[in-house]
Image (tube, rainbow, N blue to C red; front, top):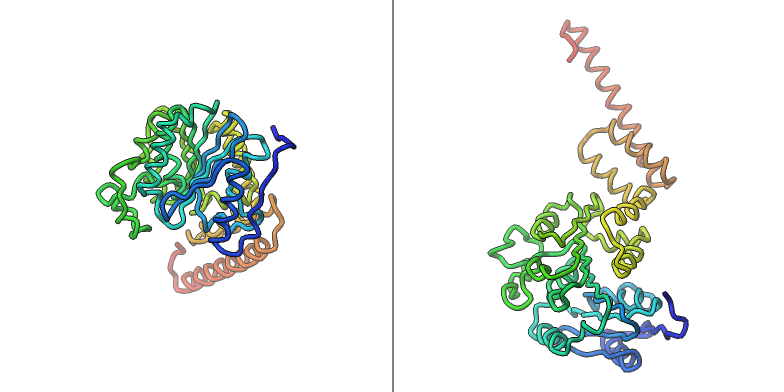
Length: 329
């Protein structure tokens, strides 16, 4: 429930990263705190109500998103009267830093998470790894992780060659192997695209009765961005924070893809790669019954023309074989 008395802060005046950090420090004094965690990470806590949303985000991602340049977790939680805690990575660190480990150790020692009725950890990609790995600090918490990495330790995940620089990081000590860190959670939702093979392998490493796999086929490599474009991300987080998220609830929200031009275009591209022009035409015609979009119309026109050429070429080939007395294939 929103609380009209809560002041919603804005950091959009920042002209540089250093400006942004200074503004966040000032905002932290008003709403909770802002703390540097070494030189590569920081934490922002906004103290409002007994519901806590913990998000793992990046400094560059928050600033590039535009608007108020506030963390996604804060933007969702504050208007609803919820508390939020955001851990920022200032680079591609996967939160593998003694300062971050020490910070969570302090939260555990102070019984910080016990002050809240419900705790939800959220992140996507690298942030999804962080949300899963540090959820061990709050037993019974809910985790929502989009396309998370389970680990990037070479001996365990040598098949993931997307982040070779990250292999230098320590994924084997504190808060290291994310699937193990989620064993004490109440619920763990892992959302991924099964068509993205490497993401699917990471997702397969999360096991246990607390784990629910949310398969979003053809959502692509950046599920957070796609869900946000479909206006599904915030309702998904709302339901996680309300304790009502389920596989059935997600798939109801996921129906939004049927009228999402980017998703339909990506689906058509996958069909096109199969080199099945007849199937591509059917796919595009079905897509246009859901949403009328100029790119889809153009793609259908091109696909119909290609299909007509193929049929004409096949007809000419059949005629040539008939003239030579060869049976048609």
